[in-house]
Image 1 (tube, rainbow, N blue to C red):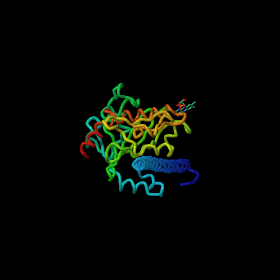
Image 2: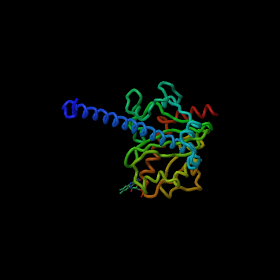
Image 3: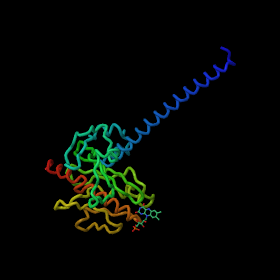
Image 4: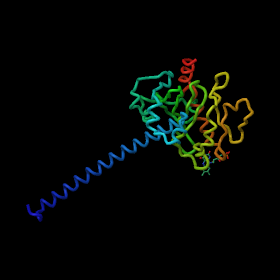
Length: 257
Ligand SMILES: Cc1cc2nc3c(=O)[nH]c(=O)nc-3n(C[C@H](O)[C@H](O)[C@H](O)COP(=O)(O)O)c2cc1C
């Protein structure tokens, strides 16, 4: 066939299009895979950080290895507080479940301190070898939704850490929730008081009194960002209440004695 033939010109152009399309598709697939992997890595890092593994991360520990060696994924039915196998934990996506009518419930307005509207029926939590439980929490921030993991020691009432992994708060103000100096207040705080009532709270910056009897339940707020501090408090109120992890923690406490 002559190189000047119209058919050959179209054939070459067509083949070139096919090759380019395949290359573009492959590049997109690789990018999506990489994005999904990076997202998963970020979540794993957050869970590990909340669970008290920040030092190992800072020391250059491999996130995937640390995670698989230490963390076990479990699903909790928030209504009963029991572990559930109603859905496959390995493929369950709690954030997507919120959008699925069968996998979510409306939050009664009078209980919706965190202003989330709807929550997933099942929570994907992590438990590490020491019995530390790492719980996903979320709620409205000043500028958008905030997502975090909070970890509770094996005694089911002592906080080990709180780490936000997504929010839209203002750098220097509300975004100081990510500041290690603010975060270091959380470990050792008690969620419940001596009579078992939810007592953990965030107060306005400067109102924290180390000598007060409730200091063990109190977090000092953020300078110039009382609104965000209040939002964090609201998240605590909802997720440790009767519509959040309250039933689960009560069961865990009864089990562990
Ligand atoms: C542009 C802008 C962004 C702000 N971002 C935040 C924020 O992310 N979180 C917050 O609590 N307050 C933020 N504020 C301040 C709040 O409006 C409010 O003044 C503050 O939360 C009150 O805290 P204070 O009583 O400690 O001063 C912002 C204010 C402005 C003007």
